[in-house]
Image 1 (cartoon, each protein chain N blue to C red):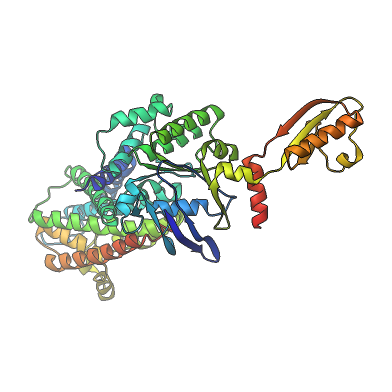
Image 2 (spheres, chains in turn yellow, orange; image 1 turned 90 degrees about the vertical axis):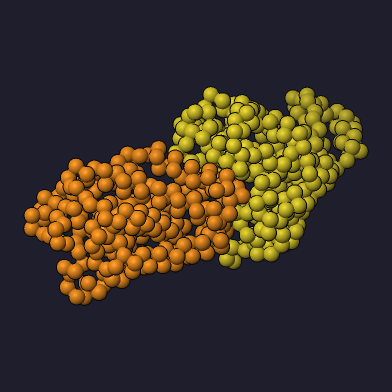
Length: 296
Length: 252
């Protein structure tokens, strides 16, 4: 739970009275443009940053007053691709587990390595791994103490599609097992498909905090895309509202199903032939852009 | 010892052990070169204490100098590397208290200092027979000196934002204090002004007290040296613990 958290760096108000609550077992998205305060908020949750005001609790434990319990309940995958060049993958994970008082948990370490496709690299030095593999080791380090709350700060940056899908399958499994997931990502389609609820941050303030479905429903406008037949042209009143798409189609913004029907009736009445038709629903990206513009 | 402290200590020991050529063998070789050059030039012309050859006088100084420099290097280089590469986050995220953090870095640095010091002592056995008048004082000053420099290393490692600043700390503070502490000479051979200045250098007391453990002779009483070294450690430990508790330059 985050309550009234403020954080200032010099003249920059990085967090401005941020309050939000993430329920146990939720898959929660934290979105915002660069510099919105997402990483600062995560740092406050992880104890890497001390808020100027407000409180952060993880599973009911205050991150300052009861920091040991709070940190034991939290696993964080940092945004930067950091690693300790002195150790192998297995040493890295054993050491990280030891910091949480865990010894002899090699079964769990082996399971994480297998799920993240790192088994073959267990005894390789961290320096010998590719960027994608290092990213997966960061995920493994965050999970090594089986935290009930897992924070993933841009976990798929620089990870190829196949590995990304494997990572999400693993994280979905963890969520199904009851782990709370907090995700920040710039891949909005990922947030749309994974997160049940989303908070949008801008300039340190929460500008939206809603279930993903509600956010998508906010944007009622849809896009009607047509590929016109050879020699066909739009009627003048539709042409004024239309824009050409890069793939050679015509896009029309419509506010309702009735308007779609009206457009099609008008085209039919004018004898305009089209080869292809598609009605595109709003994506989270559209909502994100619209909300960021509204908040400006 | 808590599991977190034990793990952080193990990590720090494994870190320097994995690069043992650089962290242990190289300083031992450097000390050996000092010994060969200085003892060749000065052994027949300089007698520092009555009945003690220059080479014998030099060895405890070289052992302690290597111990101190390597204790400092261990904690400071580990921290600056972790900060610059960003992997410091791995020890900031877990439930490790600032006292455990301090204890782990100091213990690891003391152990590295002792390993290097023992290495220097072992190779110099081929050149000189040393007396061991008071082994307890030898051990006390070795541990106290290592802990003092380990604390100073933590302060430098946390304060420095880049390797350049750490190098400045090492070359403009640690090296002069070490070299001007009586490693290579007895301060009683110095003019009065420099004799007085030497008494302000806490490194002098660590080396002088350490040397007393071997020869039973020293420039000042070992009790005074122990008091100065212990007091200096207490001050530096207090500063370090205060920095760590506030998260100075570690937690924003």
